[in-house]
Image (cartoon, rainbow, N blue to C red; front, side, top):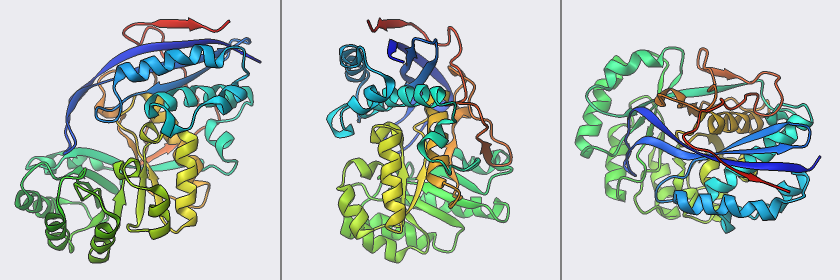
Length: 361
């Protein structure tokens, strides 16, 4: 069944509070709902949510508009194969269109998207809770961690000594069995990173993501040898050679964001290669809409494939005060996949700010 329509709908979703990190702050999430349809009325949905510093909205929108001609008259599978490699196009735009096509194809096959990607995909996905920036008030937000085994916090926004003091205060109030996943978003130089790792070595730190402002494989390897917990790469995956990362293994973990890596399939391929190389791989969102969050959940289930059960960074929908579809529901720190075909959800009618339709003849 050939593609009949491609819809691009801009959205603007306000956050309940400002998202803060060393790489930047934002209080609204802007992007595009991408919808493809076949002649039988089936629809597939994707989320294109560009991040500042990676791609701008105009570039993403222009690329999506250009796909009208490129996809005309193709079957969904052929359209999927026609997509350019992630390094040759805006990654969030490619992710949105690829997800929409995958959603449609898996609906046509009457399979959940995760099982179309990987037959042995997990039936549920464990997730961490994200409490935002580490500050003096973090302890009062710990009630939100009920049912979770991992709490994620942003560090690197305060002077190093203040971050360390706040972490020790938080550790005193932390329920037993909960680990701290810390994300510095490339806030520090090597000296600062070394000092931080040494200072928190005895705390229940589950992981430290992106400690170095200028990531270097040799320096990261040295830091990992010092740390009694895993270090992880996230945004560095778009800055450093992935082949070198997989061969040299300077850190213990990779964090995969499909919106930055150009889609679900490129992220899954990288994650599977990392697993074969002995590196742990996690999936997280970029505070995406429910469509993007569900896509990342399906990716995590496919990556787990019944063999792994880490806590993925997918419980971010509560940060949005509005959404374009029903977000993943978290129960006791897990998201259940279900048996519905594709992403398993429908976009809400009238949920986007404006609408632009591109008919494919």
